[in-house]
Structure formats: C-alpha cells, structure tokens
Image (cartoon, rainbow, N blue to C red; front, top):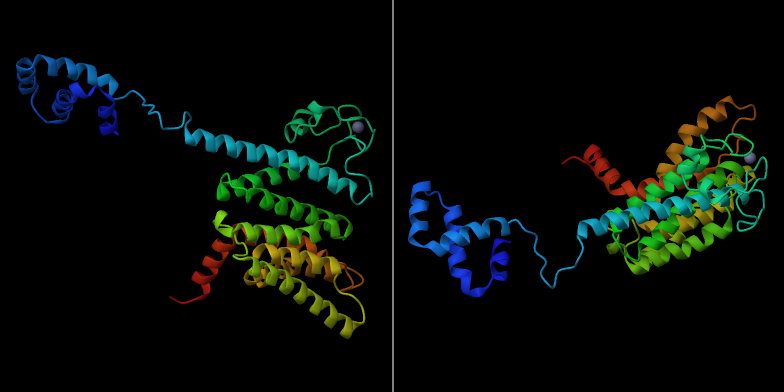
Length: 336
Ligand SMILES: [Zn+2]
C-alpha cells in the first residue's frame, strides 16, 4: 500500500520522499533525526509533507469508485427486502389458494371487514408492528402468520445471498425456498400439495443443477444435471413404492401422490445422494410429532399426517445445514 502511494507522487521527488519514510520508520534518536534533517533541508520538508498524505485515501484510476464491502451490504439488504416483499405475496397465495380465490384479484383486503389495505398498511413486517397486529378499520387481530412468513422468507433470501453472492443462481434458489414454504403451509392447512407448485419445482431444481452447484457453495445441491434427474426419479420412486406396498397390505392409500411429486422436486434440487437424508429427517421429525397425536386420537393410526410439512422442513434443513449435519454425524458415529 505504501509503495502504491509513493508511486503516485512526482517521480523527481521519489528518492527524497523515500528517505523521509525511512527516517520515520527507523529507531533513530530524535537528536540523530534532527541532525540528519539539518544536513538535508528538503528531506525535512518532505518528511512533514509526507506524514498526512500517508493516511489520505487513494483513488487510482482503475479502481471502482465504490467500496466493495458497501456494495455487498447493499445487495444483502436488497435480498432481505425482496424476501420480505415476496413473503408478503406468499401470504396471499397461502390464504387464497385453499379458498380457490384468484391470487391477483381483488387487491389485498382485510378478511374480516373487506376494506382494501392501503400501501402503507401493507409494508412487510413493519406495518404489522405499526398497526399493533390489528386491522386499521375493524381492529380485528391480524394473524402472526403474516409477519412470520415475511420474516422467514426474508431471512432465507439473505442466507442464500450469503452463499451465492450476486450470482444468477440466487433466483432459482430463492424460488425453490419460497415454493417449499408455501407447500409446507398449504399442506398443514388443507393436506394438499398443489401440482402447480411441485411439478414446476422439478424443473427449477434441474435448472439449479444445470447452472451449477459450484455457484452456491455451502448448500447441499445436485452436483450435476444427471444427479438432479436421478434425484427426482429416486424421490418419486421411493414414495411411490411405499404407497403401492401400503395399498397391497392395507388396501388403502397411506400417503398422497402429492408427497410423491414433492419428493421428486426435492430430489431434483438436492440430488439423489441427499434424498435418503431428507426422507430420514422428515420421517424422524414426523414420527416425533405424529406418534403422540395418534396415541391420543380415537381412531388410532387413521390420523391424516401432512407428511409434506415434514418433507419441506427437512428439505430446508438439509439444504442449509446438510454439511454441518453430516459432519456432526461423522464425528458422532464414525471412529477416527
Ligand atoms: Zn378489517
């Protein structure tokens, strides 16, 4: 850095300036320094002039006229804000899809008093806080689901950006995470996994693999397009086999075909190698929640369990923490 600063100065003064720096850096006594300065008057003046300049910022012609750290912070904020805005749209989908309403018309309105929501009452997260969690018109409480979905989607977008930086792979990854959030919520509410989400999801997963998992280090993704296609086939194949086996034994469907398509989408995203990990995690968390419910319920084991909820949560966990989980697994169970 110091070398670069020196080079910007007039070449004719360069040797003397260098002397000045050497004087500053050396461990001479003040007396010796003063004596040397007295010998060479110009060196002394240079010494004084160089001191403040050494701390001045430099702007070489080839360097960008912005601070790269500020640019990254700005883009990270955009990722967060976009996540919150898309999260607001996800709330509309989550609310209207089960009610078979259009997701574009009519504009946002209070579900209780039907008053149109003004733009300043529709700012993600902030409006909920400003309104004190109540409708401005009818004062009916607003579900905490709204700010929570917005916040979750925003934080996931930030987490993706942290891995990808400003890369085009951010877009399909953000789409997959948002689609997974919607699948989790709609399955929880009405036990349906809409084909309009998980079927295109297979292609988005393949697109991510095609762009290249290298652009999203730290995320568990299909490494190649072939891994992605095999992942979709393995995911769909395992659950289809379970449904057929269950049907042969019990003569009824234990799981929906929606789960088959959802695991096909997940397989396309994470690749065939990670499909067993997602299935295992979903089964364990599903059992932890479902077994106590099934034991308490009257019609034992007839309980409809929204497996898509657990598949979705397991997918997000493996996607973001897969490497950490596998490391922990290896350290815990594989002897050194
Ligand atoms: Zn209202």
